[in-house]
Length: 167
Picture (cartoon, rainbow, N blue to C red):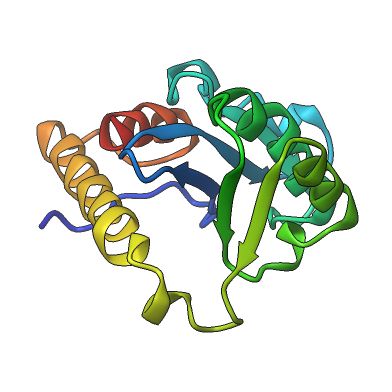
């Protein structure tokens, strides 16, 4: 493992991934901390996963309105036409908003939420999808930093590295 070389800002990116039982992935939502769309300019968003939606929020956290926006703009166009569908979520408040539940009902999608603080026990995706993705992202970053001493993981390199691991 290569010692980390990061930019001065220890800023994270919130990633909302989604997969289905057929092992297909839906483009992710990536959220950065910021108050305006200018906060996205320092990221090479065009190098990220195809179809990904990039957005911003003052604290960089998932909020109700962004959850509804993701469901309407990313999930619904990419979930396929077969209905009814079952959509299994963790119990984050942004997944249980009236707007999201109404959209789901209108589109014949049933929502099931996991009890709070139990997804790491009940959700196999943590172990068989998200865990391997995190390990792959770490490996891609290590390889990138090993290739050249000037390489560091920062806002400019994040989208490309994330896409390599995501693919």
